[in-house]
Length: 329
Image (tube, rainbow, N blue to C red; front, side, top):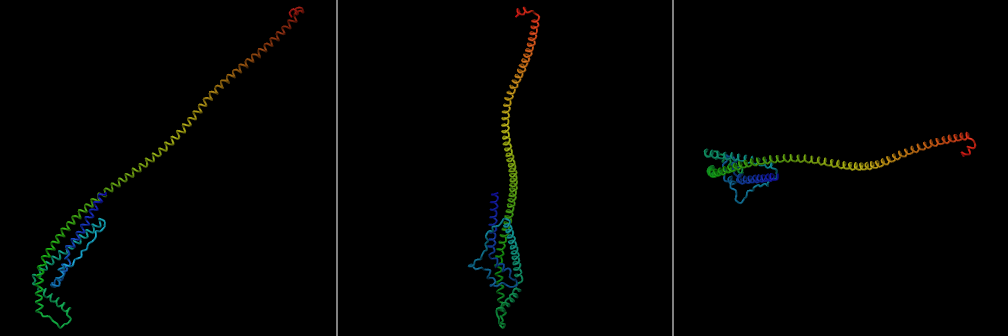
């Protein structure tokens, strides 16, 4: 992009230099233009006098002012438009110049063929008019023979001047037209080349801009995807942190549960021992009660037996005599 912009700036500078040089060449080629055009556009009925031919010779001391314009700081489109306008102006001036030159050559041929009769009459009328305007006294009348001599001399001098100046001016103008035509052709060719280069550069610039737009869109998409991935990574990290916290809590709960379980196992063992002891005690109590019951039954049996024995003794004692009782005692 930077190289293309530098190349476009170089083309602009070349175009500005070319337009300025062409304007300078045009002004230098047409330094003597106003006098010639003034000479060519005079009324052809009036002959040319020495006073009228004086503007053709420019004094050496006087300098013709040339108009220079600074290079405009404009865009390329405006420069090209100005270039086309100048080219059209040059072409129109060249066409007008060719018409004037052809008209002058035809007029000179007709004047040489017609023998100058009309020039004499027109010159007489013009001289009369100028003389009547300059002299206020109506009584003064010029001599006709003097007037005829002056007319003849002026006609001969005008013809000699025309014969000497016309070929030179025609050759000069033809050379100028050729130079201007070649310059115009060269300028058109360079303008076309510049337009082609500018169009190519614009096309390349548009292609580069399209590529830049596509790359920017891809970059935006990638940035959006990266943002989404980063967001997903953040969410996953948060989930992992929560899971770690939950795992820690669960580990704590498992440890507490294990402790409780261990404690419950110890208590269950104690309870089992207590239950075993209780059962043993119950069994012992039952055994003791059974033994007591058996003892009570035995005591009753003994008492019954003692009572029976006592009864038997009493009965036996009643049945024996008294001496036997003493012996028995």
